[in-house]
Length: 59
Image 1 (cartoon, one colour):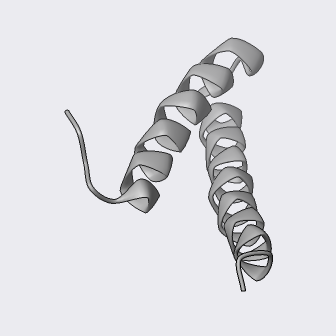
Image 2 (cartoon, helix red, strand yellow):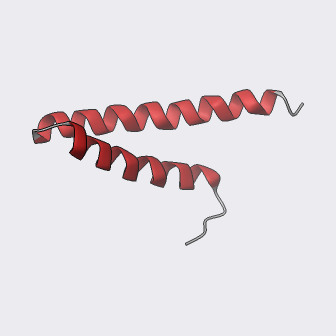
């Protein structure tokens, strides 16, 4: 499946990575959910900030 939006691709990738890492690194359900949401937030916000930073060099 190919999407035209890089943002959507990044979000879907972040979801899958966060789920897998949360299942591997945490034991109980509550901490897995908390850890996955935390990782997802870091990955998406970090990707947006890094993309914005790279955009500055194209001006």
